[in-house]
Length: 82
View: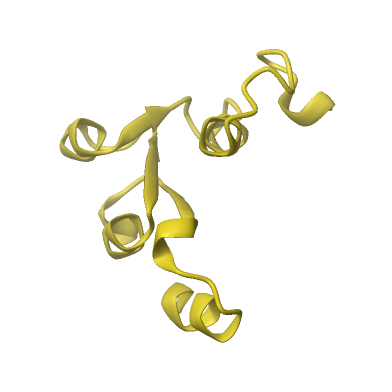
């Protein structure tokens, strides 16, 4: 699904980021140029991919900041100035 959408938009996998928290996300994590797993993911996935905060602690926002290189854009605990 993600590869089809990216292809239809003219995007390459190397330009994509994915965030997952379990084995059902593995294909997406492997496809994307940058894969992140949340802190509550199984240990095997945390060892294989960059790990961010849990999905209940703004982990997706953290992954987006790290992927975009904008770690200074929002202070910790206040994703994207929210």
